[in-house]
Image 1 (cartoon, rainbow, N blue to C red):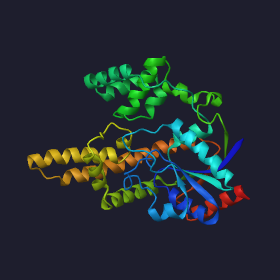
Image 2: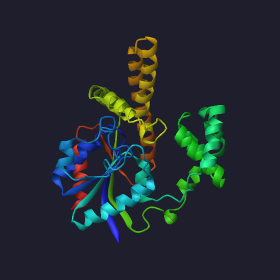
Image 3: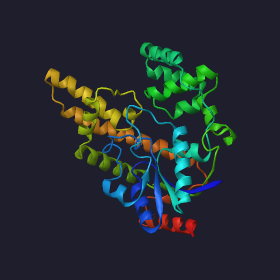
Length: 326
């Protein structure tokens, strides 16, 4: 059974949501979110989650399906997305996959090999090494055994560095090995053949255009209550900054800011400088995310590129979709 869908990808702040809503206004679709942050409940402002009006206008899937305490994997995404595409196709509609988590797209269309499950003993050893040496030193260690993975990770990305080292210590193989193997061992879409009728990629011609949009959006998040959202998450008492949800771009920086302001408040220091630092770090981290997303996109050679900063970008997207659905 071949399941068909249209995919709309792009870096953060490239206009994916607006384009998706325009497509929905012209075609009978249901949207499947391809975003590792939108799956979490209670994380609305900092993820730029679609508004209540947008969610009501067209059916959305894979949004608000996880508590921030619980992780969501690429394999789970493919299982859920495959089922949803089948159901949407059965209803006579087109599934529109929209998002910027490129690993999810790759897992769905190309597959990922089986990787070893987490090993608590190995992971504890890595954590101890990090305490003694620091994460940049472990990043340097990873660069020696798996330079491909190390080049796309920041030196302080503890979660991903830990997982990459864990896989190597368990199997003796680098993480990049598992990402480049044949899709014949696909753990994801083995039950169905998923075919993207079109993979439309929104990519800016001018990087400065995207950077400006990222800055404006982060400022809008701060004005829209982002810090209050993170304060509420912290107040739960069961979340911590090493959870995948709390390591999402923006949330990690906001958590660190609140730690800093708590310390400053107890010492009587002004927190104005800390808030400026939060803004700068949040925008920088979002730019770095966009850079990684663009790197992923360039590896997807079958994509249809639309310059999202072009005046007629939306017209181009709608034309592509119309052609594919004709």
